[in-house]
Image (tube, rainbow, N blue to C red; front, side, top):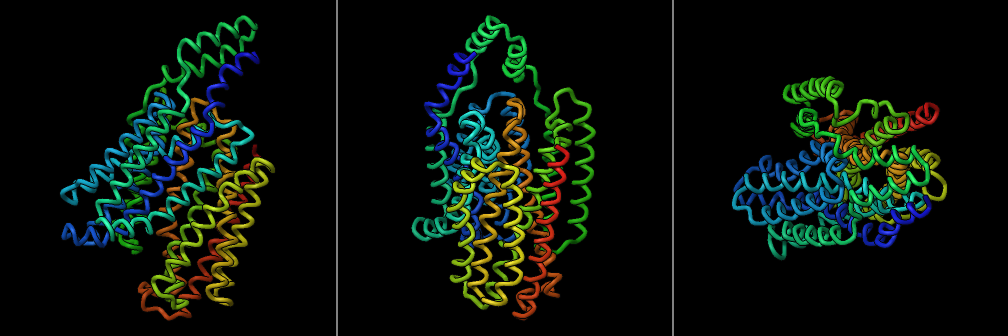
Amino acid sequence: MADIAETRAAPGSRSTAGALASLSLAMLIASLSTSIANVALPTLSVAFAASFAAVQWVVLAYLLAITALIVSVGRLGDLVGRRPLLIAGLALFSTASLAAALAPSLALLIAARAVQGLGAAVMMALTIAFVGETVPKERTGSAMGLLGTMSAIGTALGPSLGGVLIAALGWRSIFLVNAGLGAVALLAAWRFLPAAMAAGEAAGIVRQAMAAGEAAGIVRRAAGVSGKARGRFDMLGTLLLAATLVAYALSMTTGRGHFGGLNIALLGAAVAGAALFVVAEAKVASPLVKLALLRDPVLAPSLAMNVLVSTVMMATLVVGPFFLSRGLGLGDAATGAVLSIGPVVSALCGVIAGRVVDRLGAAAMIATGLALMVAGCLALAALPGLFGVAGYVAAIILLTPGYQLFQAANNTAVMADVDNNERGVVSGMLSLSRNLGLVTGTAVMGAVFAFAVGTGNIAAATPEAVAGGMRFTFVAAAVLVVVAGGIALAGRRSA
């Protein structure tokens, strides 16, 4: 059996660095494309003579496609093979980016962005899933930290890179850059990512296992080899989940923070869709998401914590700009510079967080990361009022490493013992929970801030009122992180 393990491990060990590089680049460009288009919205409004509400769909179409489809493409990767699907996703992303760059109308640009989002969903779901196939288990935390770092770099780089490109070459250049980077990532994935086990190799492993008399090994390997052939893609579940997630995302983002009748209707549709999805998944032979996964003592708490923590982190992007500009009186350039500190710190500490997880264990680092986040939230509530910009920066420097430590540890804990045939869908669920937290945080934390300020027109609020809203919001955020800590503790006891 040692010979078998060496035979299987050798190809992966030879190309681990190249595989990680290709996965990191895929994560980088998926995150870059999320933020790079935001800075182009005013330019697009002029170029297509369209309203701001219309050009916002250039960003929204991309995000909705990712949110709606990320679990489904993860499951599809489990069925058809993750390497071919990731390569197809990179090819689709690159082609859609080129189509967006050449789009003659706003409608075609929005359609291209939606297709680009589908490619990005594949990239985001399968990069995390691939870690288990390319990296030794004792280095999983470092790999997760690296992917977190690349995501942070992409998010931070998008606005500045987009601004430079638009000023120098026009808005089409931001999509041409995506097309070029996607092509490079495609070539790297083709060259370095390990191929799925071939039928001949599988047969050889079975024969060797039989010779060794290991019937259990035969059964486990047969399940892994033939699982893809037996499963069928759950199209009904995919449609129901996509419709549910789109309705929920729209309910949280429509109306620019004003929760009216349309938002309530969309939220009701999302609830109804979720109920139908659960009923459908209980009846099909090969469900998109096995409902037993949602009762897993490790996965279920991890998903809930991910939603809560991402909701809290979104508050820094929703509330931070108002506080810095209205509460502290900073100009646009200074506000942007201070806001960039969080992503920069996140990029710097991601790999370090992953190594700490490998050394000290995922469970302990989940608790440590959440404790740092509670301290960071309380610091954001107190320090800016006492020390101004310096207090805000100090609090962010405390909060952000806690978030990166939590993310690396949480992803490592979830993916450590996932069955190979479920790795894609579980990875997609992790990414989805993060996206849902970000979407929810936009609406919920924005509403909490507006309530605490005491007016819907925050631009007209006094600096004192804005500072009070800041304090209240991040005390509430600290409470949410404490709840996440309680979920972590309950999950450990259950496990």
